[in-house]
Length: 83
Image (cartoon, rainbow, N blue to C red; front, side, top):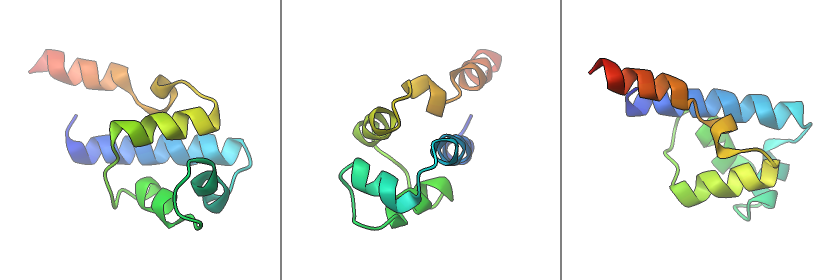
């Protein structure tokens, strides 16, 4: 899994979890202590920006999910094993 695949996967999973919880991008941005609008969340969901480990933890905590719910560790591990 390369950085582009990682961002795409994270963006898709973040969008799915956020929508399942009925949260707007603006609301999630406020919950994680970011900007007052959802532009940061939008950029993550649309693969326009990377995210720090701290950012990942803040998002997982705000959504009350495990970090593994946002990341596809199985896919990443199988990619490493194949190399």
